[in-house]
Length: 138
Image 1 (cartoon, rainbow, N blue to C red):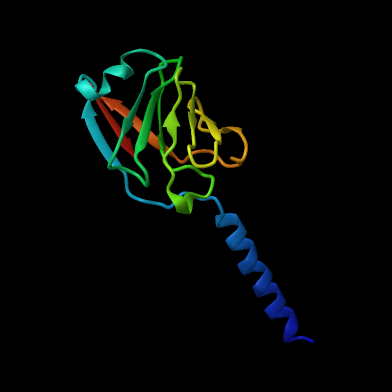
Image 2 (cartoon, rainbow, N blue to C red):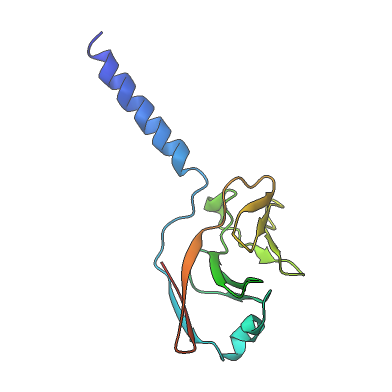
């Protein structure tokens, strides 16, 4: 009986870890830098602007300028079945982004899910503005 209890506790711990990892976006290094006057970033000149940058993160990144003029950045990889690496697309108007594979929607303000089947937010990256340059890093 004593030998069964440790085995049972270890099994529960392992199963709990796997459940916690479900729906998680993989960790990849992100180090995007560009001048704010870069023509690719002109949509960020005003609040509500959004740009998609491919080649960074898991499925690309979305940079959004919130109505309070703060910048936020998210990985485009949907948190719904992230193993499929389905890239969310910004909606028009750019208040949300939609996962074309599942139909889930996410707020661009904070990355939180606003329509099922999403339960987890988009993966958020740090945004730093210095000397007229924008950096998205993790």
